[in-house]
Structures are given as C-alpha cells and as structure tokens.
Image 1 (cartoon, rainbow, N blue to C red):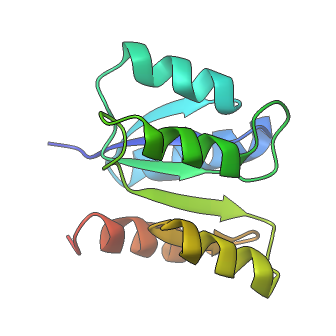
Image 2 (cartoon, rainbow, N blue to C red):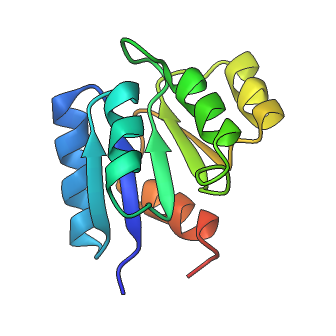
Amino acid sequence: MAHRVLVVEDEPENRLFIGLMLRTEGFDVLEAEDGPSALALLEREPLPELILLDVMMPGLNGWQVFERLRKEERWASIPVVMLTALAQRADVERAVQLGVDGYLTKPFEPADLIHTIEETLGGE
C-alpha cells in the first residue's frame, strides 16, 4: 500500500512539482495550498503518514501549523518534514527544538527529498 503524504506548499509550481515527483515514486499525495487548507483537509480526509510542510506561507506559517498539529492529539504523532527556503542556522535549530522530524532546504534534489521521506517513515 502506498504511503500517504500531505504536501503543504503555497507556491503552485512547487506543489505541482513535488506532488508529481512523489506520485511517480508511488506515494499517495494530498495537497494543500496553505496552513488553514491543510488543517481543514486533515479534518475530512484519512490521515497522512507524513506531512511535508513549507514554512513561509500566508495566513498560518509552517511554524504555526506545526504547533497546531502537535497540540491536537489525533495529529500529534504524524511525522513532519519542513521543506523551506529558510536555511539559516537559527531556523534549523528552531525546528530541532520544536521536534520537527526532518528539515530540507529549497532548492533540493529530488533524491534527497525521497530519501528524507523514506528515512522519516522508517527507512523503507
């Protein structure tokens, strides 16, 4: 059975590219254009096994979405990989302190994204 991944990305081109790449690798992909859409999707769809979460988004940013995910018991255990252009040491340290499961900076190599997802899901 394919792993279900939720891609939360406000840039349509990036969302399309990531979704296509993951589908090509056999993942079942859900997509959301921003934080509120992602939270609404989690309310109505079967839960994903992993969330790829952009940080810089309008409305709710990735940090705010991550905090909401961790506060909600039914979502708290879903692994989250931040996928962001924020490459400063302070941003990476913040992610580690918050307990983010993975952190990948844009631009990224597709193989690195797949590797990070597989590693986060248990090295399959």
